[in-house]
Length: 445
Image (cartoon, rainbow, N blue to C red; front, side, top):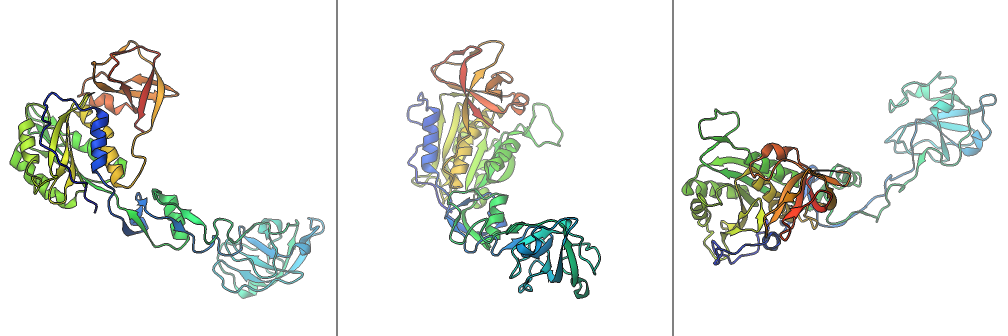
């Protein structure tokens, strides 16, 4: 595992009125987080991981000429001019099944019944599909051509071919997919099902990759109740830990949801310490704004060996809405990076998309770590307003070059968030955006 670069940070900025920009905060995070050390994994365990080295093809695909059809392997001259009225009559010398090592040679006036994927026998130049024949005289119509093997007594006889076939018709040439020595995959490739299939096809049982990062997500707040439990007075259900765990998995991580932790510094500290053994990144939500600020700061300032040089979590105020209060640093003996996100559902999710997702994808070894962005025309009933000096991220629905705001600007509007697939970006120097204006959009799906 690769530890993040040491940081020399205090617990809060010396200028309490200082506002970090979104870009400054993100740059600080990405300058600290490092890709995880490469490891060798079995193919299925490597799904979703990033390849760290080029993979060269050791053997051509396919490794030999083979048939793409069930039919008869023949010589071209023997079926030239064949028709329904004047079929070519060939002696069937045997069967060629997939996996057969030494198929019988095909001479003049002869044919070999061949199965899909079976090697083209010596002497044969083309394959006639079984549908172009009578299925073989003497043995009767051939059924079950995919049965992989036929009895010897059924293999002999004659076949009537009703159509000619050109050279190498229905033949998959050796190396027609990839050739030995070709580059199969390049470093930086994310291994999905097609890439896993290619690796298996060229005989690779393991591959060297950056492992998927393990992300521990926990929410803080004595008011939080787990879904499915009874909701008492003054309590709310914990949705943040579910949202961020799902978001971490969507980003490519192996995510563990811890759930809600009470607003108690010692409980939070011990919980985080217990989770460090399985964490490449810790994400907390809640308790970073005024009120619970001191409790969370106290807890995160003394996790494991976080008080060593380069450790600790710095709390900041960002020039953004939603998501003004943020925390970032490293904790524990391995300097495990930690992101402390605000507790309002929309603030938490927007902060994850802007900061935690790029951190996760950096740990994975990816170079393109950000959500795609585009320009879109604002469709709205009235102008959008935004506080001066803050970069605002509003939920939106994007389609066909247009984006429509979804819900209001409140940081608690979970229902609106569920119907949004984009974030509308209003720059710091803009206080109003009129309908019809072209705006920047972050695409979430």
